Length: 396
View 1 (tube, rainbow, N blue to C red):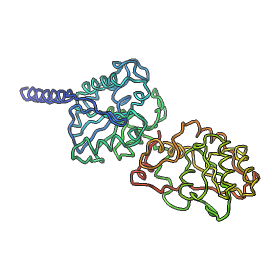
View 2 (cartoon, rainbow, N blue to C red):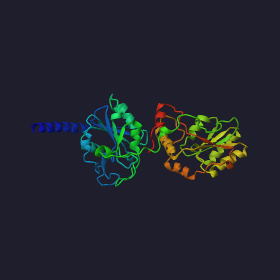
View 3 (cartoon, rainbow, N blue to C red):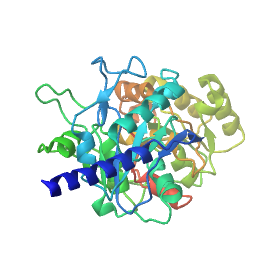
View 4 (cartoon, helix red, strand yellow):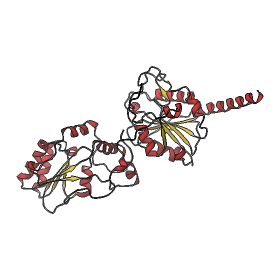
């Protein structure tokens, strides 16, 4: 009996010490859309990283989004107990909080809430949140990279024995559980190289098969010729009409292979009338030109073909055939990859969906001299970080 009470007493002291460390709060640090606060955690080569919403907490109200800073409860009652089973792992919350950037969530209220959550966890925790749509937002690894370089002392994380726990795993609906809203957490863990588990697996011990993402950027060709057939540049005056979804690699192809051709681009010129005027200016000067727009339909392409025919200039068509998943990946890179000079900005999802809906396959009957397909080949890259991001999951 005496031994039992002594052990209980020691455990109580350790628990009290952990609770005291968790309550040591300094000011939140904020930079470039990253917000973080260390509530008493210590650097370690072992890390237990976790999402917040629907992983550690859910709403008391049962609604998807919290109605107030007090509308939360622990997702499972045993979460504090399970966390204590990993005493050597540094606990780190890594969470996307886009609602703060969009004005749907008060920043101070969220900070107050998460500090109360950490106290309920009864563990020292480092809290990190992405509040902007940039490289810090999961599945990009910006938050983890910053943690590893700046917030973990000289400890190099042992990825093989560290974890990331999250609910966004791309799972289909099952029983009373709804379909996951995306697979951001899974992709983040894959990018970093952390062992991934869902809350049900980690906290409840349930067996579960997590589906792999349908598209993996590492599958994009790393080398080879971009143009499937024929030659890219010719020594005669000509016009090349690009056909491809937004973010299908058109502008990068021009920059890599066709800088001797005048680039006619709607993103820059804003209207088709200005594009036609710029095209005519190039043709009058005896220069070749590239119509670097999406050009999805025969009707859209016909005005450019007619202009070239008026000057007896042959027209070729280059089709950039990428899947919608690839287009979304390349589009997301425009928004998060600040390690290269972007020729075009990120577009909303709708123009990409619309291109694939409206697309009409080009035909020689339209007046093309030839039609070629362009393979997406990775690179050229401007630096190592540019290449790393290209082959990482960045879209969710």
